[in-house]
Length: 60
Image 1 (tube, rainbow, N blue to C red):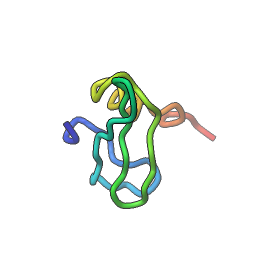
Image 2 (image 1 turned 90 degrees about the horizontal axis):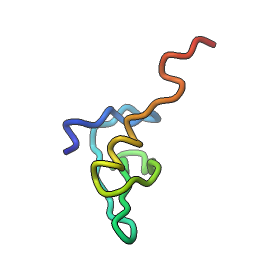
Image 3 (image 1 turned 90 degrees about the vertical axis):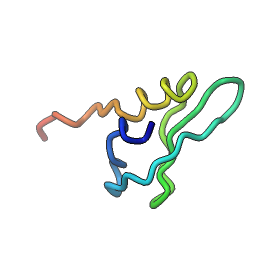
């Protein structure tokens, strides 16, 4: 599943893992910098949350 994930927004690593949290919820964790994404319903939901980058196209 990690081949579908965008790299870590903090360190750029692709060493990512789906972590089961509780009652069907999961989150993506970075193995390099220990960043932890928002929870989603299962691995698919966690992947979708991780890949959502609010400011990716924003111009500052």
